[in-house]
Length: 367
Image 1 (cartoon, rainbow, N blue to C red):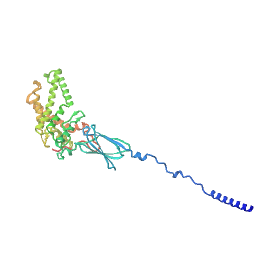
Image 2 (image 1 turned 180 degrees about the vertical axis):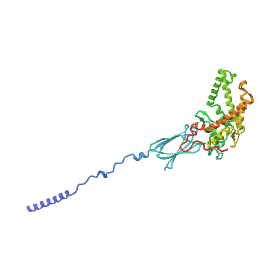
Image 3 (image 1 turned 60 degrees about the horizontal axis):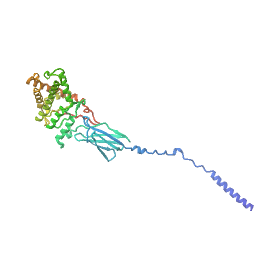
Image 4 (image 1 turned 45 degrees about the vertical axis):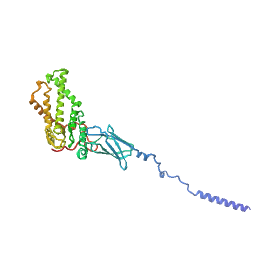
């Protein structure tokens, strides 16, 4: 029995030693290397790249006046959908929640050439564009497009009535559109009336009357408030007579256009010759150049009527009337040269370019 128990004990000890040796011979498990671990993902990175922004701007015409009702279409590269907006009374438009990336704006407005603008919007960016200028469209100024000619002329006249040298001096009787639509009777008188009631016109007449009184011109009018009033009245009557006779009545009766058609191209000599000749040549309502009868008759009529209200001592009959008419025609020639070379540079927004093209018309028609 003792030997049997000793044998069992020996077997148990042997098994224990074998199991322990097997356990001690195994390599311990290693912790994962830091180099093989992936960095944690940064939350919100993808969402930030797609954060929408906004686009806004203002639509103006060549004179710098805002354009109301212009249709603006926004296209996003890679997206089929398009957004549309209409400029408000201040010429402003805006688009919200615009996906980032390349975009294009297409602008259209009655009476103006279509315009496009391209750019790129960054994620979350608020894009305030520079004013986008629309030039008067030559395509819509043709009778062939089906738009009534009187409406085309009215749109062009609306632009002309906002033209001011240095932003102050009215410059209504000049068109920068080579094939401008002819004015009807109402529009010719409208342009004349707009000129004579302009505040700057009244200021010039008032200043001239003051100088005349200080130098005692037309002495028969006397001095004081009464004398100044007579000088102001006579000067304003001259302005009204010359403007309505030469710029409305005779152009209507003779079917001629009283405006100066800016040339803008060619050599200095050619442009100078063109400008001077426009004092004697005008464009008829039929679009053809012809003798400027309305301008010459307007100067004569204004000079003749002035004999009715100037003092008797300052009336010198028919000779003075023709002399003053000649001076007036010569003044028109000099003024036309000034219009051709100087005025466009002094008229705000007229020579500035929009994002893609110039606001000036290209070239006036040849004779």
